[in-house]
Image 1: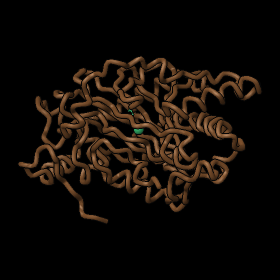
Image 2: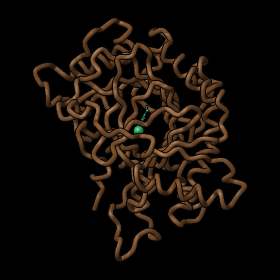
Image 3: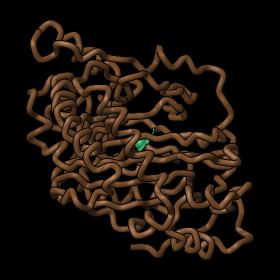
Image 4: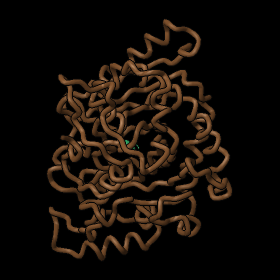
Length: 368
Ligand SMILES: O=C(O)CCC(=O)C(=O)O
Ligand SMILES: [Fe+2]
């Protein structure tokens, strides 16, 4: 592995590595900085000018029309309903790459309980959280800036990561303030994930169980994000623009807003819809579908609202890191030859964690 690079193209006249280490070793995350009462953000968080230039609101953000809300009622009991929903899912997956689902079967109390529990963990006193801060993403960990030592700009967010599968988690590892709520939420998302994978598979003309055969969704990582108050939201981001590297992401967001999707030259807001789950296509689905489905760049803005934003992203990934994925034979032809080279899930993830903050999409690195 190449040695870590720790430069910030826009501001090199300070010791970035030293400041990055200091932040890392504080084991307090971004919330710790806010609790300490900072009024300007440390230079390691300042994003490159080409990114900052895109933070201004763009004129066309007619979000609702672009990011559809799909009603999952009766997809399991009516064939007509099912084929109508497959069409809607397929259309969203092959254009904007994002949609929201309602009537997904998870009770609203479970959704609200999960968000409240996640907020409660991040709001725990610093000394209680410090032992949870670690860089290894196994079991349960608190993490701020997973790519801290490789990236050229840090972002304004802390995350509680829980690796639920394929290796089962010992529940005792999960902090008590959120344990029951997150276990419950996680279990209930699995049925939604199974259904979505079937619908997406059907949308490509594949068998209902094709994605399951590919082990999609066997790995489950729950990421509880906390985006605290930021005194200078025009200099950094809540989370950098990226595509999700895996198969499929289910996202539960609170009502604060800030998630944006890059679509047709502009940034479109993913407006919070009560009781909905946001679904987005990951890079592996774009690759195996030979780009029939789109994994689209998205980001989260930093905000100077005093109320933190909380979201829970569940990443559904292949069951084994050694699995190799490329465009499926069924989905390529002489007229539509494979657009990507075959890659192990592990190598793909490695690239994700070492990507620079710039305006390129990660899938481009694997394009033929
Ligand atoms: O917090 C959000 O709304 C989005 C988070 C996200 O995109 C991610 O974790 O990959
Ligand atoms: Fe994402």
